[in-house]
Image (tube, rainbow, N blue to C red; front, side, top):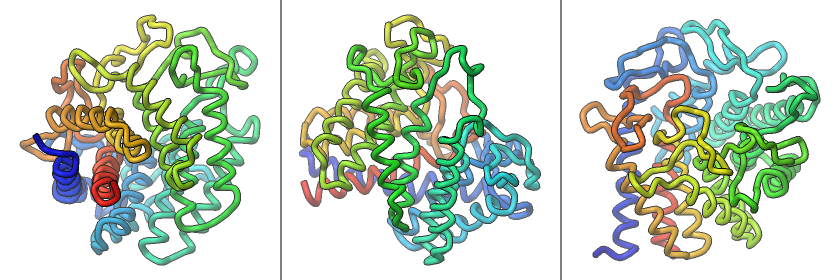
Length: 396
């Protein structure tokens, strides 16, 4: 039986090789649009383009990934050039006159759809930040910060973003915006300093703790009232274990930045513990998509499917939790989620990974990309899995 150092060394090599030799090459081979610019992410199993629509938020994600790999893996010229390729498309075609960004554009860059969320903006901001470091062009660090401030302006100014519900009927707020700002600010802070970044990280963490963490259910809820009130409805009872697990590692990453702040370690590991209990499928393995905090049947028909990204977030979170606590249960969970993913998701024939599995782990549909799946969660997991495994081996 391998000891901890042996298997973490093996895992670190697997993550590095899968990232550099499988995932990223697949996307660079099949998704680059050299005629109109940007990338085409709706790809069939073998990389065939299924839809030429340009997905704005994934452009930011991929540009961030490529620049981060240039910064943190090795300075490959192609990665830097392709990061700029994505950023050029964003800057040329994806900003509306109000400063906000589109969600979808046509192949040639013509705007197609704009949503009431600001997720295209958050991912463009981290792309600008990573590219600033990779290229040395610090104007992109300022662009990242300016965009972050615009995001906060839209988030914090009533009426600028259309609410999901009719105002006054069942006012609510979501976990998504609160948590993503932690990671967005964290990434921007690597290249430019501004008090608003630390301030927003702290505000988001406190809001999650105060309003979204519900000890009575041992869960993080996706939707609560404006002041954290429990909403006894299908939406209000919804738990998304993978999303909560992602939040857990955002918090643990910030705890690490603060010298392993004890309160944040406790908060992050508590969220991970709760979410693992709700999410892990004891029968088939893998993280389920939705649960109901009162154990009613979830509304969404895909509630028991195994999507790619919750598994990815769990692998990162368990490594951070072990690094923070040295609690062996997190290594056990890491082995489980590692084994589940590498058993079920990789496509051994055409490369890259499937995104959508049935409850039993069989493939639901084989496409490699669409308007939601692209080169982000899987390669980010591999990048951080390689880094964290290597750090644990080196530092314990």
